[in-house]
Length: 162
Image 1: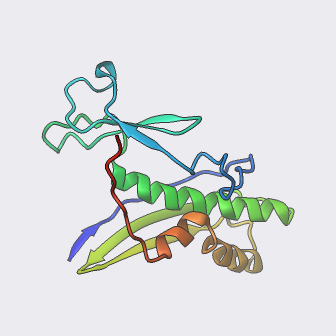
Image 2: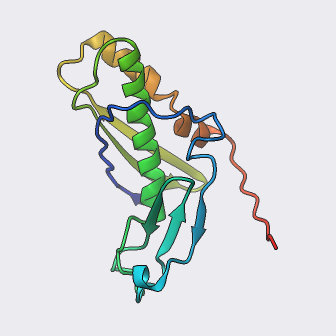
């Protein structure tokens, strides 16, 4: 069994995210490319990721030969996507209901055994939230778009383009 334990804390975001189902949402399309030399001098792994409004850099830790730890690794980004989406979805629900999730934290790690990968999502709620709010937020956590995506039977199609 191979296990990676990674905690990705998130924070409360006071702005409501765009609807992920709209074509304008930044999640609907990203591009990866080799970064310009000044961004990744000496790194064999650094990759620039961009969408319509943001650019960020991925790399591997320096424990990997040829890497410079210039940014999070792709594995961390998958976990961060689930943690962040969960936190934002709960926050959006709470705001609609007239309360705030306060200092609620979401931590995600993952284990793999054979062909099965299990994401472990631990939510630590702000003490000001009552039992009914916490129960509903746990239910809402399962409705975040990244959670729904990762639960599907996923197939990846790789194509060469001209």
